[in-house]
Length: 288
Image 1 (cartoon, rainbow, N blue to C red):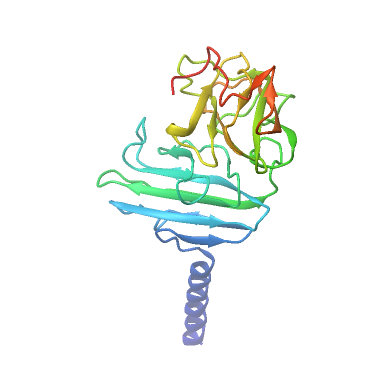
Image 2 (tube, one colour; image 1 turned 180 degrees about the vertical axis):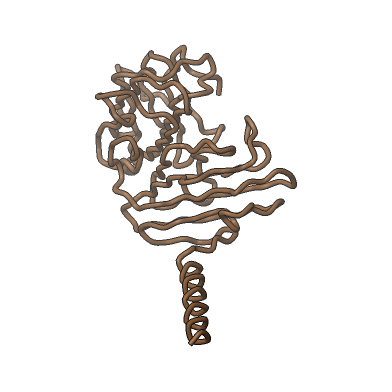
């Protein structure tokens, strides 16, 4: 009788352990991830991540959707400039705009891609480590407004985009919004800011809105970086693509902005002159 009871107890415990192992996901160093939702995590999470590694996750959701990435846990070596261990999130795969770099334990708000792809890169050095990160992704409709969702592809002849929560309340802290505006061939893009109120700083180091010419963002393609409470002068592309990115840090917030865009024939005129490549930046522009 005792032998039978012992055997049943052993089988029960083993089955429970096996079932628990079955339920707990195993996180490896990077990979290609597809589907409408899922989880990614640092290698060995929730255990301590290994030193001297670089792991790359490429997330692809169905066409017509964008990626919303939310960090559920973040525990990396802390440094004010995230120079040692960090997680980078990119709006796409190759030569794409970085949406943010993160370390320490402060989790950012949801990060939103402009199209259906997002890349996450984690780098660790030889020293201090932590439990790493756990993040969930979900495919969402582009331009779904609210505290969590913003950004996306804008390809209608004209339209409006705003910071999250506009105009009811301030934009949330720790958010990144990226809008990719695409005009048809032989057209350029006009941006006009109706209202603008973003945390002021002489160099726009904290909350800011940046505009880039082309489909991707880089220092070379940046038209301007704006903050403060003076709306930027009208901005015009020199081709059919503009990339607009809004970033808020984890501290002060403000009203945000509302911007109207429109496509115009490439040879059209504005106030009697040819469409300029860029408009003169306001005093709130940071040096490019």
